Image (tube, rainbow, N blue to C red; front, side, top):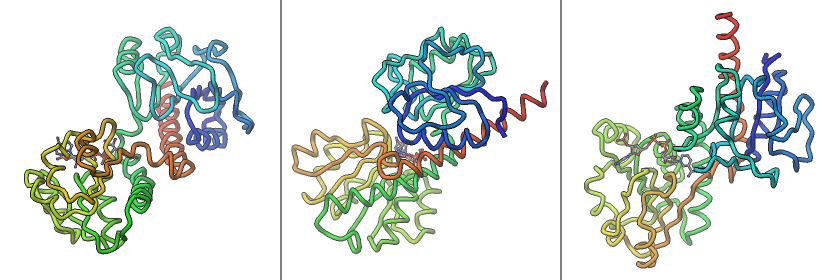
Length: 299
Ligand code: NAP
């Protein structure tokens, strides 16, 4: 149980509701900042404005998946108030206070380093990334169905990258009956793709490999689908770019060539906010329980 733990949950979207639900269930005391328009009331969770919170009593701070913007603003869909995470706020928390977010940026990195606090980026964890690949795959299938006039079954699909998302995407499209080839650069990945019953290719042969594609799904956060590569694709090819912004596609050239290319960020939060929230809630509660146990041991 998280009895006695004070947690500030600042901003976010529907995914955070699952986090609140889970932490309340574990008996933590929650302060909700940026939730004034949320109709639902959680017993054990108290709405507050950021300037009202006594951060010296906060044991852990939970930010949205996006962390902060580059000027420190915290996104929230449940409020119109402007919330900014400042150095002053972080410095006023106890030294052991950990900050949890999905991802980070220069602003947040600088802030935690200046204040000597620990930032935990949940999306860097393999377990979170692998669980998250499940709704990501479902969202990708949805996008391909919405933007093509042919079945996935029997179509030729290339998946670029065999990371945590690429592997799940490749397997799902294979099971839907697509002819899946996967591009990677490591020999161990080429071996794994072969073991999975899929067709491997080395990314250095990408230009040759895209000539017969119906769908190209990119998971590589690097400019991989260049103008030169796109120029070799059949005109009907659909590109779905899952890599984090700005993606790995030359969207300007794709548009010029009349090839439909979609950047599709944040699919878990769009297609399955409840599941995506539960994934975060489960990992967060586990980490907080471990942290509490560790603190009790060292007392
Ligand atoms: P990952 O496990 O790190 O996999 C990344 C893949 O990209 C690996 O196969 C890696 O190969 C390859 N790669 C990276 N840089 C490369 C380069 N310069 N050249 C060739 N290959 C390169 O990451 P992930 O968890 O699968 O996530 C992939 C991307 O999807 C990330 O940008 C992530 O933020 C994003 N994402 C998007 C959604 C969404 O809803 N759209 C959801 C989840 C994740 P090596 O091992 O050889 O480096």
